[in-house]
Length: 594
Image (cartoon, rainbow, N blue to C red; front, side):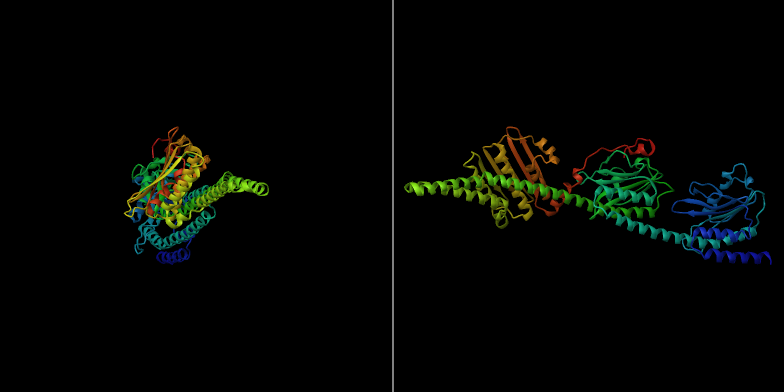
């Protein structure tokens, strides 16, 4: 059989062998076995190019019949023959390397010996759409002038056949990898939804990121809804144990991503990037079209980040945003439950105390007087008429106090006639009750731009909260302020309602009391503060020892504005504020502000 016929048979066998598998490793091994039936196998290399990672992998290499351990180099940084053939997409035959300036990558590994003859052909098929080259097949010899144009043709035909198989194998592996990653993303969603504890959610997010993207460092930052600054929540890898830091609004890559809501992929060569990182990806955490934070990863361990990595991180971030919000809501519900339980307990104690000090005492006095009347009826009936008026007064006072307490528990006037009517009734009843005990004057004034002269009806939750705030403030002033007057003012403007309670009592240290807010040292002020936050209002307390107290609540009329202000008083606003740390020092020992 002539050489030409042998070559054609060999090419057919190679096409059948490599075309029957979708495993890249198997394609490479079959290619080597079939090709070396017709080519000297002593010095042989199959190099595969990964465009996304900019990596040349020497998958299968034999040098003087000895296998060389697979290794990889960066294509863009390489100036060797393999990269040259790949870039030019043309085969290259060199009779004697010692007479040229060309460098062969294998020679660098063995500087004591140098290949002379060299033949390299790209895995390239011009008939494939969008073909950029799959890699290179190369053979060499330590003698000069070994290879001919016939060898070049034969190796080129092999490479053309193999290009299709290698591309199909790469596409298959990419699709399998994509399926695996989608499966992992589903696992991420399942994992993140399996707990409602915020700390556990954050740790699971970072574990998944580290496992799937193979990065050296990264961190998750959440947005402060008041200042729009970003503050550190948790890190991974080299940034796992760094001190918390804060990034001012709009500063650095993370600040830019938070401001624009768009992901960024940055390489060192593009510009100076955060923390002197070699490369990074940063994606926003978005919930209900609002950025709540960012997820940033630094320094991919192998190669550069790809568009696929960016898409993968964005997928994780989308699940992370929902998981974080669910955990927050859960914590908020638990906190609100505890607050309600504490408030109910305090309300029960207050009710028991008020019943004991008020109606119970009056009913006890009435009972004693009725017993006395019973004796008079038996012994001195003529004195009985004089005892009825005091007894009736006691009964009237007891009825009035019980009605007042029922009104405070459920003010019917508030539901039927609104806040203005309910406050007038409340102030009248309180003034009537304190008139017999202390010389405190309780007054109410209402200002409105409503042409009808009455307060405009507000949302029932807003009216209920404002009534409870006035009730709490007035009750506290009556019990503790030792004041001569207490004034309640409601002022309505086109955009807001202002509620103010002022007294001229002994005052208190407002700053100290509010600083111990978390200790719940003053349930009255705590209730006022939390009710104000729940309706999206602002609270201001001014108190000077010996000069009285002023409590002022501002509530926007617009529902959206109240929702926005409620967001500013959520979990984030209570988070510890910290200054920007020196993350750069952790990564590379340099000092560079974020």
